[in-house]
Length: 97
Image (tube, rainbow, N blue to C red; front, side, top):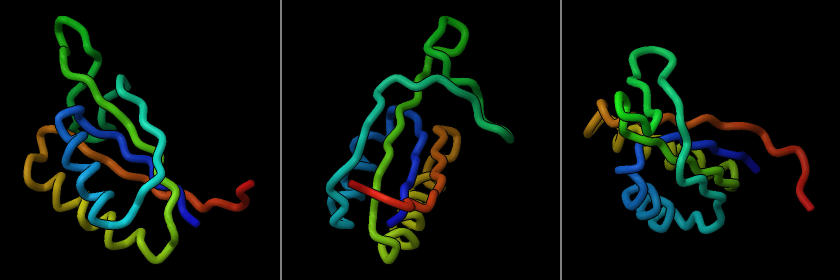
C-alpha cells in the first residue's frame, strides 16, 4: 500500500475527486483549508488580503499498482493550468489496522 498526499489549489477539488472515482480510489482524508507556498515557483496561498487563494489537501491510501497511473492523471491535470498549483507525494505504508 502507498499513501499519496496531494496539495492543490481549491479549484481542483472536483477534478481530483473525478479522477479518484475513475481510478476506483474510494477512501481519502480531506483538508479543505490548507495554507502554503510552492518550493520552486509556486505563489503563496495564504487566504489573506494580499494572497487570497487557498489550498486543500487529500491523503489517499491506494494499492501500489494504482499509483503510477493516478500520478500521471494528476500530472496531466496540473499541466492544463500550471499556475493553479498541484503537487503529489508518495509514501510507503508499512502497517494498517
